[in-house]
Length: 71
Image 1 (cartoon, rainbow, N blue to C red):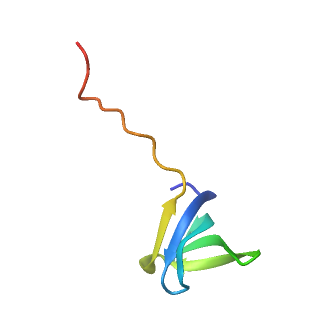
Image 2 (cartoon, helix red, strand yellow; image 1 turned 30 degrees about the vertical axis):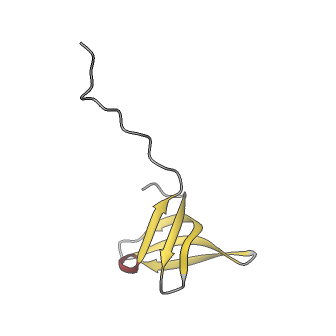
């Protein structure tokens, strides 16, 4: 996943389910660095990779079915 990607974050430790954020960094020390909105403010949060789900807000492009080729 690219950095500075708009993401949805799920993490039970801080009680967020599908909160919109921006992925800033994926640390080799085992955490995501994310900007999350809490109320009217945006906060930088370090979330442990093992207990956090990060989903890109933009869906992937539909795969091209290479098996259905007209001849």
